[in-house]
Length: 303
Length: 245
Image (cartoon, rainbow over all chains, first blue to last red; front, side, top):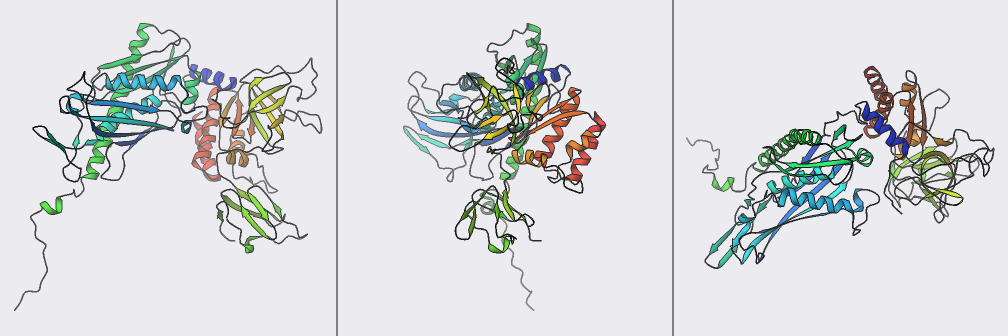
């Protein structure tokens, strides 16, 4: 039966002694992230899918939307749900359907960072108040777990939200026409800010702080602090579920370090989106029709 | 010399590839199956290896799954202990292997080693079949000697692919050329003192004088495994790493 791996005594002792000498197993600095790669689908008709890799950790996110009736107590808002299910794909010892603490924590932190902070403006998803609105649904799948799945999930989610295009619609009195993407260009979602999560693990009663822990480092840590903030320095939430106590100055320095990392992640996402936009714009759908140039036929002059 | 042939499960081996055995007997190694009268087919995916001298055929599998076979040296992690045995994990995806509490050199009921959960041992697979639990032992039951097996203390364990671990264990042939194409540990051993134990289940235990050296060896192992360095590439990487330490 697959069972959760626990590191051996040799590994955890070695990891701690290496950290005390400021060494990590992959020779990174204590506050250095692994290389982040962000990919969008190459199909120009598909929007809102991302494939994020932080080192060996891999997460994919898919955004979809449909038209539904809004909740009666929130007539002017659309609905935005985040669904993250952990599966045995990501490692041994994870079973589908088993109530796992990790899954609950991930859902809760993503919820607080993105939904409750109003990163996605749900009022912009309303079509007709009280009758029709968009339900934007984000599905996250963790494909490989080598530590840092929360950071990767948040990054994938925010990048996918910025990449996604919802169908355009027109309202005529009570009549709503939702256009197919081929009839009218789909529209970007309104994002008020882009929050990212940065996880800091700590060891030795809070004296050693490490960012972007690998799976082995996560299993040996004494606790972690997850800070969600955007590149402007606005903190959405700070989560510390148990673990060895850390003093206030420690938490403040963690927030400051996380801000640097969030700015880095934001730059990665922006660059990837910009490159993707440039690739998709090649030619464009209507360029041939919109051009006023006639086709030139080379003919020999007569006479 | 024909190019290496890659086979998928179920494919038959063409007769011109089969070596001519002197005594009329052909030895089949892992990954091949004989259907009488004269068809040999592949059961897993891999590249076909032929040894004409020994009239042997087998498939080299570059996969990540380790399947225990009798006589393999493995690094096992104790998960829990029961009355007479320890339950050890060879890989996180398979069921536990059984290690008898008295399967060590020169022990009796009163003088056996007290192993706890999360300790690691270097052991040999003594029984491996699909329908029973795998059994391992920490001594050679024929001679009664430990031969390097037993609890591994200190050091660090690195994960590698089982195929890479096999290449590490292949040793050298008559001219001193490494059979598996991995010269890493020998090159590093020229300058740095360390102890190493390679488990066929994809684990390498390294214990060196300092933390920095052990981390360096681990990095080199991972680089050679994932980067697929050839002998020259390994030598260059070792030289570069030794300069930094």
